[in-house]
Image (cartoon, rainbow, N blue to C red; front, side, top):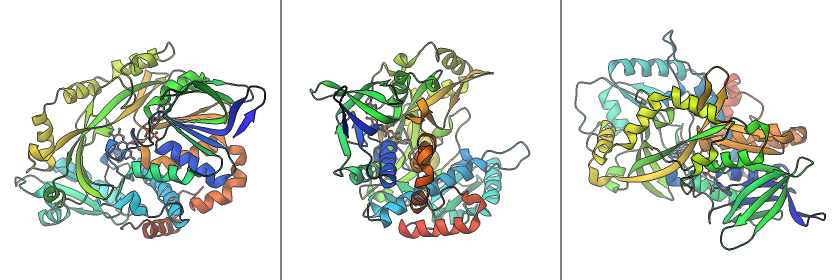
Length: 498
Ligand SMILES: Cc1cc2nc3c(=O)[nH]c(=O)nc-3n(C[C@H](O)[C@H](O)[C@H](O)COP(=O)(O)OP(=O)(O)OC[C@H]3O[C@@H](n4cnc5c(N)ncnc54)[C@H](O)[C@@H]3O)c2cc1C
């Protein structure tokens, strides 16, 4: 940190806004590449990882397309399109390499602090879905990123893979599943705390919790004046930043709008909240060891694919089922009801209205979800766990996802379900919007931020980047030998399976 003599404000090379997995990942990456950078992280809550990155506020799936059917749509010609699945898996291999580097270099003591091997399964019923799953398996099994996936329609095999799901199931309906041992359950809250732990206490890093960023304005020279308010009685103050990362989760859109960069114009947000049923009854938990993903119902957004997950949070095992979608106008779980109305601007209202006009199936789906009773939720669970009893499951509220709405030349506006990195002002500011595949891909997303905002320094960072992520700059899907090496090394270092 330096003091700017003209205005006596503190100046940092990097200001990170938000104490979630995204800011923490970027902070650690930058620290590895340039240890002398001055970095300040401002988070509005009193600890890190209390919003979406918290262990129980997301499903903890290490998304690598081993089980999520929405990444492999059926093409009109009857073949399964695996291109998105390949990209998602490639991205997760980058995360695996980044985490392996942190473990090997002793910066994270044990992978078990945040990561557990849990098989990933897809599970469907009905002849048509069984046929789809078989085609999906055929398309994926030969690919170097997906090798090791098994498919079965045999009741005995399914019972062995997922005894709880098969218990008390009525006979007669065709069932099919795939199983992959390389699946993971990630406690992104624990990961965030470990990452911030790497930064904390080192010279040049400041952690300011209970500090809300209220505004940011250009200060000339591609620098930023960031206005910060201490929420426990402190005054508002300004700091100057040479680079700002808005990793504020749902709070990113309002801050991006305040920055005034042209790249933010026309962008809107649509919040969808998530709820899960959680079971901690040890007798039931012991009978399930997988993340089992099904098919989304018609009209449902991709992130509402139902799934039954083994979770490992701080050494305790539990089960999650969901998500059930909800509607709230808050952009953060601990946000304000005014978040959505306040985000509506002249430049994005057209796109938002166009999305409202074009997305009736989604609206209908959300209304149906919001009106669900406790019995309706248990009924949905019983599709997966026929023997489920209400008294063993509690409803918990997870994080908020703010889906990105963008202008579209033909339709006026479109709703996106992925993540979006927005950069501007000569690469001096970046923001992360959206939520899927989410935390699993924090490391590759932050590599994108480096490329777009620190491009001039990349040549000198390239060798170091390859130490951290050996596949940096290479598509694993096109290099089977490197792919096998990367999978094997990260499997060993992270104590994973398959
Ligand atoms: C229901 C649900 C299920 C999910 N399941 C998965 C999954 O299985 N796998 C997966 O990979 N991803 C999943 N995700 C997505 C994943 O949780 C998110 O992508 C990820 O946690 C986002 O991290 P973040 O750091 O951007 O945001 P967050 O973790 O939300 O952190 C944002 C931080 O910014 C702070 N903040 C906000 N505004 C300000 C401000 N003005 N000033 C200072 N600080 C501010 C907040 O307090 C918070 O600390 C899921 C998300 C949800 C909601």
